[in-house]
Length: 241
Image (cartoon, helix red, strand yellow):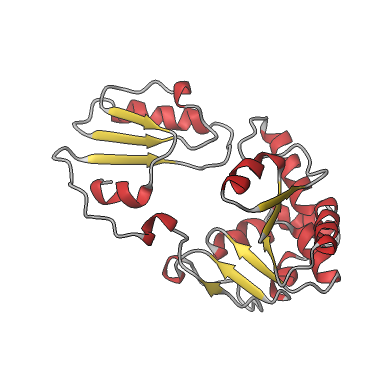
């Protein structure tokens, strides 16, 4: 199994023992890159509609033909190249399908994609498999009249492969605060407002900042502990909210 992605992902994949190749011209957008709202949006749209990612995909496939390619649902340019080449392919939906369908296919990203000749829903529908990595019970009904056949796998929680003993619930009510793992303008300010709001409450607060917000950007009150990452599967059974 080999992966094609952005160069900053290389270390994580290679540590896990996978072969990795990076896109040659992915553009400046990264999930944690901090930039203004306009440049962030433009960079994201360039990434998902860019044809260069598709060319890189076909170049890697030519080196080592795969049995199946799995492509992020938002990489419309890469999905289009795979379709034109007749590759056996699966679409990976890494969120609620309804949210991706409404916000991306029906929203501004989908509109930009269609202007460049890409049809997100058609690209999904024509794939051999569409994998949705969440619980079907959490998702809303898909787009009316949709021809996209969805296969729900449930969440991917490798930490739950082993039995986790029921953790002790602390005597003081605990609140877990967690926002996005990608950079969103103003996210640090929102986290700070939450911290200010809970400052005087008789609660214990756990905050996970994710990779896009530096913990030292925030001023934590005495009842709050800041973490870049905590395994939610182990933490959530101990929290009240």
